[in-house]
Length: 287
Image 1 (cartoon, rainbow, N blue to C red):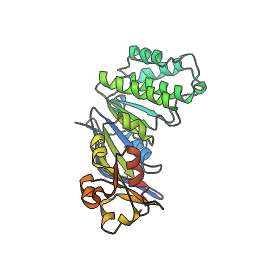
Image 2 (cartoon, rainbow, N blue to C red; image 1 turned 30 degrees about the horizontal axis):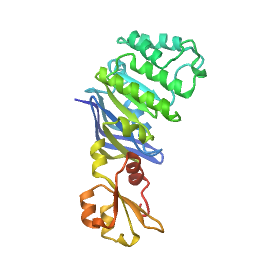
Image 3 (cartoon, rainbow, N blue to C red; image 1 turned 120 degrees about the vertical axis):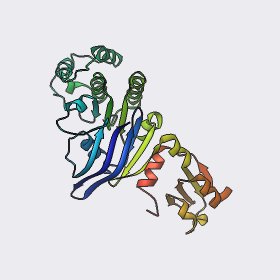
Image 4 (spheres, helix red, strand yellow; image 1 turned 180 degrees about the vertical axis):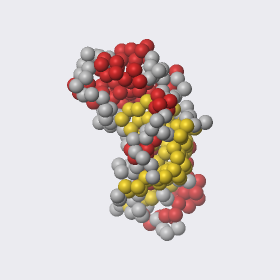
């Protein structure tokens, strides 16, 4: 069973249209959701969370269609975003006391374990926490009620690398102990290089790539060579490319085909997710 199933989803705004024909998030894995600002990441998440009304289509979570009155589904979702919605003037212990009442599966032992792990002081007021401490506390709350699905919208934005690494380590540790699915939206692709199992790339409201992360990395390659090698025929094996005074650099999604075209006359370099995001969405001279 998939954790999230989206079919023929449409949402129209002035100047922007979200149109996802089919997208399934596999249960038990971390799926990274990447794309440039304005691509539709947050809109998709708000529709999944029932924070926006869709124009068309269906969204199912753990086999049940999303519905504003479906308390059962809401209890199975943990959420961590750039903003939490917590009362900024409240102490952490008071926020916990209020939120734990909404979850039948609330686990005080898990809560205390991660509060201790992050060295959080429950007597502190939420607004006085650092950005890193806020995201840590948000994650603690999200993990403490045994969610089956954790949805994250830019959870590590503006955090330093050490806090981001600790955040990801706790998330992966929790997944090893619980049957959890993570849907992780971010523009910080280095986080997903380390943690993701699957990657979905959204651009201009449409999902243009979806595959296992390792498979995506394996079949793509950066190609570098002389400008004279760029012809009408050779350009067809590149997703996009850039030219400069010294030569060209492009991305291929078929290394074997690129080798047949360019042979040993170019350099082939390994890609990361940032390369894939950049070349598919920003393009180059042929955009």
